[in-house]
Image 1: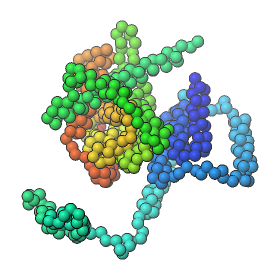
Image 2: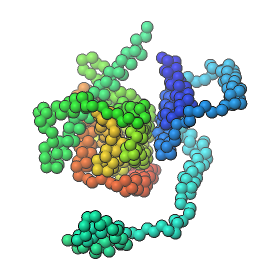
Image 3: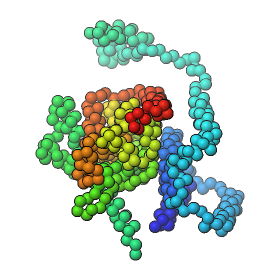
Length: 221
Length: 356
């Protein structure tokens, strides 16, 4: 039963990972990556680490990938060109590296002693309470340094996003400036006369139109 | 052959089906209740023609949705356009399984004790928060795939609002977590059954409750936080281009989300299935106690749904920048303050006086 579930989730993770690389539309790649994360979360649950599974979904699939999807949508990343890119020397290099990777995985699979792992149901390493207690006692320094790291990231983002240049000297922002068509200000003119009448403040516009623009609602009629 | 696992799976499927049907019925009648209550508050009757007092109106609406013409925009991204309502609905429905509807009840004739919750997780609360995070995708993808700039704006605004208020939501729940010491929702409800079922966490965490309520209303895109789907602002926001059954799925998902956050509020703050003095009258573990507990739970959830509808009839909506600044500059600091306050009071021993 457990083996069946493992095959299902692992197959889903591998399929979605292949889809991430093989899709042409970047949004489909992002969605496939979300599928990978959710499959990994299911595998974590099967390994008796429910906290990590939930945090994987909340942080990775729920926050980081939302950011990636926002970026893809707002930057309007297009499909790749259909013209075949020149691969050249990359294909043999990829084959060599893939062979090295497969050799490493095979070595690990052969030489690891499978009997000495604890069974998943018995250990309580993955429970929330034990992670929490370890995080605040043995791993306190990395915990605090990670929070400083996140603070650095936030400050860095705010610094990068600030407007560093001043506005050009030709821009004028006048609060209350209105642009009225002449036939609104002067009802005697015909509707065709749309000459612009520029005012600088709300009070001036109100005077031209003949209404009371006081901010106090009791003084308005 | 070992029948036990298969029997377990079948029982779980039956439990899931029961919860599914209950949720669909409650949500369908919430739609009707909203229209009628809105009508009464606005000085008119709501729909009351179909069936007695409008009781068959949801079925009429369902029929209408099924028979409507399904319009698909031509240049939309097809796969994502069909995927978005599916993601939203699945994320909305997946959280149903962790809420305890009642205590472990003994059914009289079979003499079997069944837990009235579909799945007991150790990390039930984190699971709910995780699935709520996934629900953001449906809206963002729906807005983008409609190939319509108003939908895109509405979708982005709505998802930005949801991820902002998710933070305040999670933080407001940390106060309850500190008091209960466990993420298991069944255990949290069990902790609220002292004093004959009236040691609810709302008395210990009033500020947390208010923050949770505001964040939950913003999370489900309801008035006063429903600018992204307001008719006058962005046509209909991210579900402008959806018609017939796909729109019905979005609509359904919104009400199921309302139901979900109401159930979470009931479970964490209002004591879940604890009805005060019920164990004094009926005795724990009996069938009548279980029945009264389930009815009490549903009554509390319906009370929250009534508050949602009442707020919809009463308040105007926030502008989007007001909404975002409220979420980040006010609600989040207050939630952090709540955590600090709760932690300090626990250390000082204030809650010890009340037995928490």
